[in-house]
Amino acid sequence: MRKLAGTKWGANEKILKSVYQGNVRPYLEYGSSAWMTAAKSHHQTLDKVQNQTLRIITGAMKSTPIKSMEDITNIPPLGKRRECKAMIQATKYQCSQDHPMNTRLKQLSSGRLKRSSFTLETRALQRKHQEALPKYIEPIVFTMNNTPCEEKLGNVTIQTSVPLITTRDEQTSNVKKILTMSMLEEQYPSETWPNGDQQSEAIPTGLHCSNYKAEEEAITHAAHSIKNKIDDTSQVVFLTDALSVLQALKNDKLPQLQQALYNIKSLTTVIQWISSHCGVWGNEQANRLAKYGAEQEQEENPVCFSEMKTIIKSLFNTPQQQDSYHQLTRSEQTTIFRLRTGHNRLNQHLNKVMKVFHLLCVLVEKQSRIQHTSYSHAISTRH
Image 1 (cartoon, rainbow, N blue to C red):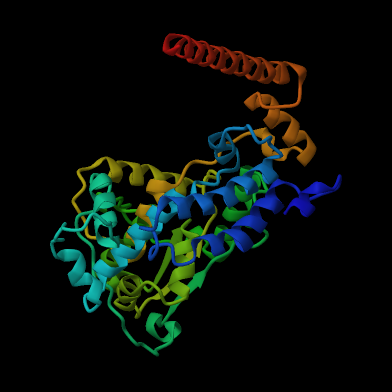
Image 2: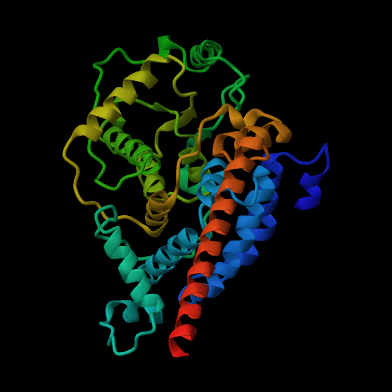
């Protein structure tokens, strides 16, 4: 990494950070939940490697505080990541009913030995974050199902794109709105819509429900509502901006939603993705209903292991600093960061360092004189 960043035309912050996170840090964290109770001196040996890496990425001087380098690069301490991984591992044991560690985590510890253990450490972490963690966790169920997703969904068609709309943020909201409305008018013309009453619903989805889970619950609830009106229509179109939910549905990862859509297999169903926050009327109305549902009283809902994993990671994640610093070149970033932290090679900083060094020398010299005087006094008294 020093050679990558050492030349004049060396790698920038993004490349150096990717190299560290992809090729260096995995070696420092391999099996960390197993040796998290090791001595602090061993942990400090690994921490020094990351601290050296932070200085290479930021171009900081040796006297720069480590916290400042961690904040600007958004790289958390290794100890914080070890705690996160240990909590995730303990949650996986709790969700696995047949695992030997499941019963061990439920048993009381003897407490005779002063040495810590994985069980004691994870219990302490869970007590520390108990207010933010769900109380009920669903067990992991392993099922073998060889039926393809297309056969389960029947007449359901999943569209995860809109013609001419790119996934990147290169297009303005007005362009996305025009392309979306033209697609809807072309493929689903308003003349074919039934002239019936409009119905809007907003339901609470639970205290620890993520946005991803809420989108899945919304489509599932809509499918159950349509099940009672099969006789009134022959075609249904779902419009949603939850692209990740549609991709998971295609990959056969949402059995509850698949079952809800299977109940309306007699209808010709299309689930169409549309771009969010571009001014489409129905999409904006759905966002208002979602906010209204979130304001209602939420129940303590059980969560699965994947949702619990997301919640635990959110407890340890720090928000990325939105700053134009990250758009500068490496040499400019190094200069700006040194000026911000006050640890640089300017005369003012060196003057402060030399003053402190001079003050220490004076104190040491005074201390040695005092000791020498007391020693001489003791000799003369003895004579």
